[in-house]
Structure formats: structure tokens, C-alpha cells
Amino acid sequence: MTQAPGPGRWLQPGIRVKRWLLLIAAGAALLLLGLSLVRQARPLDLLAIPGRAWQQIDARVPGLLQPGGPGPVAGWVLICLGGVALAIGIHRLGLAAAVALKPGIGAAGLADSFYRTRVLAEGPRIVVIGGGTGLSTMLRGLKHYTSNITAVVTVTDDGGSSGVLHQELRMLPPGDIRNCLVALADSEGLMTELFQHRFRGGGAAAGLREHAFGNLLIAALAELSGGDFERAVQLTSEVLNIRGRVLASTLSHVHLAAEMDDGSVLEGETRIVHAPQRIRRISLAPAGAAAPDEVVSAITSADLIVIGPGSVFTSIIPNLLVAGIPEALQRARCRKVYVCNVMTQPGETDGFSASDHVQAIQSHVARPVFDSVFVNAGRPTPELVQKYRQTGSVPVEPDTDRVRALGYRPITGDFMSQTDVVRHDNGRLAEALMRLVS
Image 1: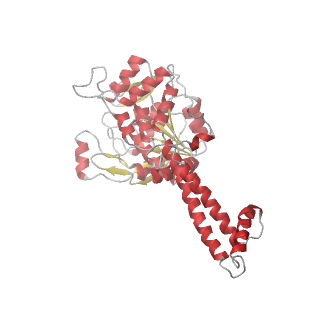
Image 2: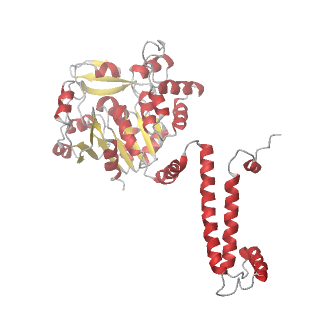
Image 3: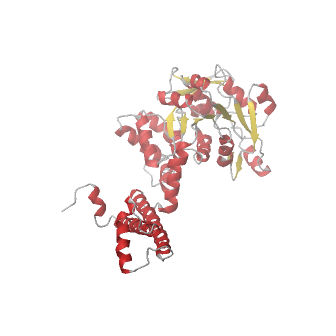
């Protein structure tokens, strides 16, 4: 007969905790016996029973409890043995419980889990605003300092897998949100590789080709949630066990519209970024998109707000055009930082210096929405500079004097990672940002 659920379930075969419960009981008993010996069996409520036991033994072994006798020494030995047994039992019981909840966690994993839930949960409240790979790169560094992170992500991507899902299922494009979820995942192992996997090659059905698995999962969860995109993102966050939360900057279906240097107006992010003309001004269509209450609340209660890094016209500014976000940024009383890109982007910020990036943002908002600017002062290797120059990209000039003249405080440093690509180093960047709230 199957035993009914309840406290008695702990004693069922196969649970693998009874041995540690017995060890804890034995350790406690040894501890009490040792204490009673040290006290020479003098009455104490807690020690009354073992005290009486030692008095019975003393009647048969005269001198055990007498001053100068062997009793106190034996008592300390028993106290040490009991303490060790108690400690081992408690540790192993806790580990057994943790392994049952999360197989393979191990002692080191258990310590990490406690650190995350106890220490990181008390970390500063940080809001990051943007999109694209720049934002997800930074999140990988910040999650090691705090789990109170709110990523506010743009939802105007109309290319690739995100664009197809947006058109065919009338859902918000999930690509940038997926990247941020993966970046904040507790451990970036097989599950995160699965989320980033794209169906490619001749073996992929036409309907699946180039779709990221994570995008499809979010789409499926949105459908299961009755079209609730927010709920789908929340469920995906639970699957990945992320440190923080990811929110769409708006739940409205919007796309980008850009006025170009030649006066023409282009619609759609993909068309805009591939146009030969420079962007003069960007806007959302249709107008009037508003931020969810959770986004506004996170911004106004933050300890630090970070805008960027990311494509200035297609990842940064679109968030600042959503009603409620610039107003919340102006009300926020914490430090507000813009992280400028390390390289220019062909077709979007050709020839831009750091101050040009700042001015582009400044021209789209009524009042300043940040007070400091992180400007990279590191330089890529000549080989990388040449490689990027062939694609039309060059390092962003760190013209800090002009940034300061615009009314912002420049914060310089070598925030760059140089491998086969040039981007922000998430560790250096996160460390520098955390100094602002330490």
C-alpha cells in the first residue's frame, strides 16, 4: 500500500535521509552526554536524563564524576564527537534535500545556490534599457553582482525569426528578449545552448529553417497563455531560472519609422539599417505606445539605471520613445548612465564619436534621461581595426571634452574585450558599473 503524503514520507525506503536523521540524533545524544559529564552530572533541565545515566554509571565506576576524575575529559571528547556527528548529519541532510530538488547540484552548487538566493537577492536594484547583443553582453556581467536586475527590451525587430513570428502569429518579436533571458540564466549550459539553437541545413523543414528554438518556445507559451506575451516571458524565465527579470518596453505592436538625410521616410528596422542614407530621426509607428506599469515602477525604484550599450537608433532610442519611460527616467533619483558603443555601426552611426551618440539620443527626448556616459578609451589591435574597417566600422572616438560640454559626466576606461570580435568586456563593464552603487 502506498503511504499517504505527509511527514511520515521521510521514513520511506529510498528517500536517503534516514541515515542522516539518525546521525543527527546520535550527535545530539553524544553532545548531551558530554555536557552532563563536564558538569559532573549536576542537574540541568536539558541534561537531566543523561545526568541520571552518568550517576548510575558512577555508582558502578567510583570516581568518574569526582573532581580530578576522568569524567570531564571524557565529556569533552564526547562533546567533540557529538558536534562533528551533528554537523556532518545536518550538512548531508541539507545536501540530500538539495540533490532531490535539483539532481547533480553537489556541495559547491549548493553553496552557489545559497549565495545567489541570500547574497545576490540583497544586491542593488539595477534597470538596464536597450536591446541587441550589447545589452545581453552586459547582463552576463551584472548577474554576478545582483539578481535584482530588470532588463527593459525593445520590441521593434522585424527581421529573421522574430520578424516571421511577429507577422505570422501577431506576437511581439521575441529575439532580443530571448537573448536577455539566456544572458541572465543561472548557468549557461545545455539549456541555454538549446534556446539559441537555430534550425539550419537541408534537414530542417521550410517552416522551421532559421528559427531559434527559444523564439518558438516563447511563441508556444504565449499561445498556451491565451496570447499573453508577458506571461510567456515569465514562464520562460522560470525554465531558465534567470537572475532578474526581462520586460518588453511596450506591449503594443509597433515598428520603426525613420526620416533619412535625403528627406525620405523608411519603415521597418531591416529596411532602415540597410539603407544607404544616414538616419536623421527615428520614431515609432503607430504613435502612442505606452510602457507597462512594471517597467515604470522598476525605473522609478532603481538604485542604478543603465542605458545601452546597443544600436543607438534601433535599440536605444526606440525605448525612449515609449510613453512613460522618459518621464520615469526623469523622476528617478538614482544614478543614470549611458554606455556608449565601442565601434561604429555601418549604415547607422558611420563616423560617430561618443558625443555624436549622446547628441542623437538627446535630440529625441525632451529632457536629459541620463547624467553620465561610459566612454571606452581602450584601442583594438591594428589587426582588428583593419578587419573592421573592411566592413565599414571603426572605433568610436572618445571625445570626452565634447561629452562634458553637453552637460554629462564622462567615465572613461578600457571596457573592451578583444577576441575575434570587438565588444564590451562584460566583467570589466559590470565591475565599473557596480562601483557607482557601492
